[in-house]
Image (cartoon, rainbow, N blue to C red; front, side, top):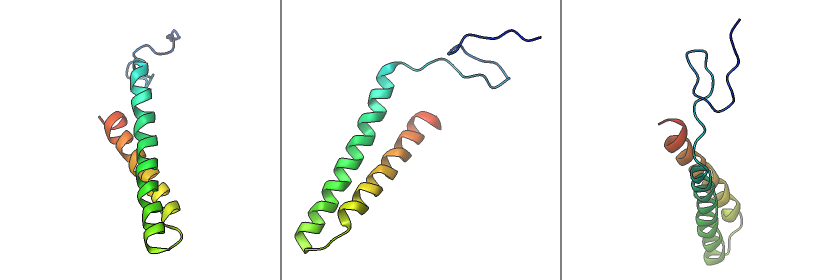
Length: 79
């Protein structure tokens, strides 16, 4: 019978989670997410106001969220 490991300890070939990342990385990921949403949402809002259109603000928010999540995935999950 296999002994249980405490949470956050490095696992072996059984697929147990690795060491817990430092809390600074969580704040960095959150700042990437918020920055992308605000930046692309602001660009979309500017296009809406400049050309008297509707919908670019929402599209900018969604594109910013998607781009930020992709950046977080590439930086922290894939590496």
